[in-house]
Length: 254
Image (cartoon, rainbow, N blue to C red; front, side, top):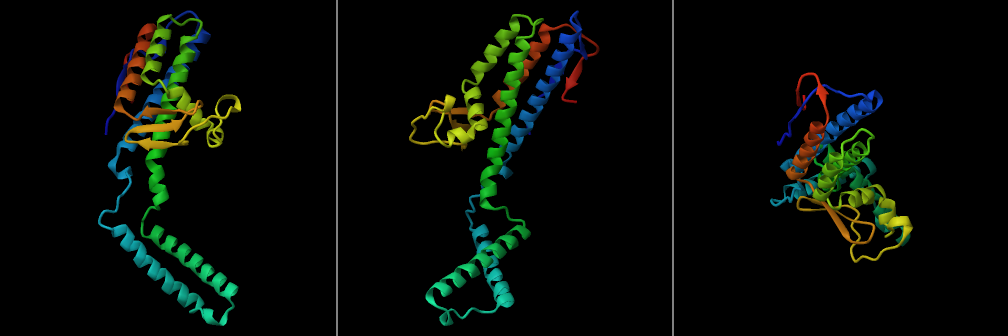
């Protein structure tokens, strides 16, 4: 587990504009939360236990076969053995498919009871943490933008924001695609304009990169990396340093 830590230079901001200072303090708290959330998402994404099991020894497949046989016996005990020869062609076909449906459902129930995770769930686990990481960094970026536009902000804040954006050139476009998946799935970009693409990626992983098709039809990506976390940490402490603080220094996260 990688844990990002940082020092906050005080407990309260010092200055004349009380209302603006209160707003800035609230923004700082939320930026700190974004960094913590991104750190958690990164660690969970990187956890080998959240990877996709390749079932190289076939144990999962063998268990599924065993449990399906058990399900078939249970359904046979409950419903009896079917005599499909006494049914007409369409009725026999319907009875066959209904029995298979019941066996499939019972097999699924037995798999879940045995602690097995469905394959579709396994595929989504790392994707879920990747989306959380992207969301946290995108929200952090939004706060950087807002804080740089504050009336009492130093011009240096704009430079910090620009440096952070350069670390994640596709961040805003990727975030927009995640938030507007209903448009991307229909190959629609800005203002509903259709785009052409050979491969429309709604959400995908390529090694440690979260990849989606963005508004112009090209692919955008955000790496799920420790470097991204350190960029957040550096930007946060750089912003801290621009302001005057009162109270004792604090080590975060507490």
